[in-house]
Amino acid sequence: MIQFTLNGKRVRLDVPADMPLLWAIRDHANLTGTKFGCGIGQCGACTVHLDGAPVRSCQLPVSAVAGKAITTIEGVSAPSSALPTKDRRARAAKAVQSAWTRLDVVQCGYCQSGQIMSAVALLADNPSPSDADIDTAMAGNVCRCATYHRIRAAIHEAAR
Ligand code: FES
Image (cartoon, rainbow, N blue to C red; front, side, top):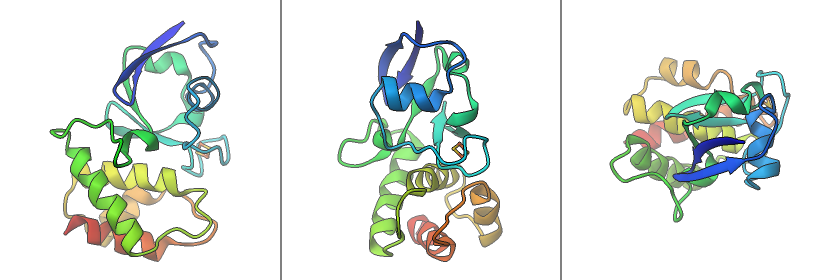
């Protein structure tokens, strides 16, 4: 039995300790916003926050998050955001969500929950990132539709 906080709520999952966190979240906590892409830590589709920092959930055994706080795309999405208002990610998440919509960032959408989780973590740490900061922070998030230019523009817009 592994216990951790998932989007602000305590959960206890009866899963093998070495199960990747991604599958614990999707198949046992029934939160399917976090996506499987490559399964080898290379694409970023499975990005979630571990104690506020972006991590690849396909590469993290669920036992590694015992007692810790995991936030998924469901936890940062308005109007049901699980982030406390004092959490720096709350403001970043709101700004990212509205910039993503205004600039029509999404094409097929498959990678976007991972992109958004990385963007929210970046803006929570660095409210005014340069192009280079954005490129560094987002380098591990691959988009097959090549929406990179819109992602970069939306991060700048969310920073305003
Ligand atoms: Fe985890 Fe690609 S599915 S990085």
